Length: 459
Ligand SMILES: C[S@@+](CC[C@H](N)C(=O)[O-])C[C@H]1O[C@@H](n2cnc3c(N)ncnc32)[C@H](O)[C@@H]1O
Image (cartoon, rainbow, N blue to C red; front, side, top):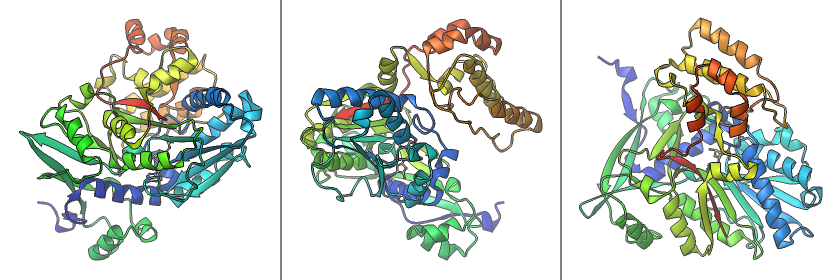
């Protein structure tokens, strides 16, 4: 029988998913700051290739629009550790110092803790005078002059923002409600005080408790709903008409708000709002039964992005041109090669699905080492790869040793892009690790995964 002190108790009532999602994420970013990257990496948090592709495309457009004589204002929304800005600016500086000298890049984030981390990022400090920080909420801010920004960028923010989840069945519509539950013995203050701290997002008080976010259990229920008075309700209903019953459909209402903000902020001669994120790229993926619609990372609550609906709402908001493609195609085009991430490469190893997690970690490190024999990053950095809790002593030692010996100019991350020729050059070494030649070739074929990384630009 469970001890009464380990009993799961509610931290609040059932509420629509978007309300609890944004509540818990504000606490996650407010408490953790740059520590978020102990829970997840993104394609920009250590790697540089997506940032370079973005910088190169930006430069082409700046030249086309002849913006280079005036100040060029860029805003990035939801900035994490600031690495995207650092690598974007470095690329501009090395390719076109004149354009670089006109850049005014503002890193915007709603978490002061995150911005504190950005302030001490040495790679960004190299660009002093070109970048600025601002604490603002991307969904609601109106801190800037209308029509004053040339380019807006965000990476993996839409999935964090308010998202309702709808499900249809026989002509009826249901909305997902959530309730957070926690074991009563986790907080180090009386339960009632903790619930008050949690409800009031009292970050200073919550920080003094043992880690609790990753221990939250989410109870779910679906309730009948009429959405005719929701913003964009008619667009959402039309969208749902094309989709199957009984499949939860994320409605990224926070992303819609960022589009409204972007439309208001972008200057007449703008280069658009470019957003990278992950989710369903077409109706086909939206209609796949059983596909994920949310994911938890160390307590952060993310929703899959419904790109087709965002594109439809974007047009309704007044963006005449909405482009969507697979993010890998964008980076691949920039490098004139097919690309995939190191993590995706490891997934094609014939034994991966049967491996213990620490053996998969060892394979990842050995794979990086094999690639590093030919891979050269233009930036130096040491990858942090601590063994996960529960790793046996022998593997712990091997992981620590392998991580310490990784080249400082090698593949910068597990979520870093690698090209087909880099894999080809390492084929001999990869085969020694058990990869099959055919697996290595097939790894670059676009698989039909329900969730993919997308690149959307709205103008
Ligand atoms: C998943 S992280 C991504 C960070 C970075 N763009 C990257 O890709 O590594 C999301 C970031 O968005 C910020 N964020 C989340 N909701 C926000 C909001 N409503 N307004 C502004 N920033 C927000 C978080 O503080 C965090 O820095």
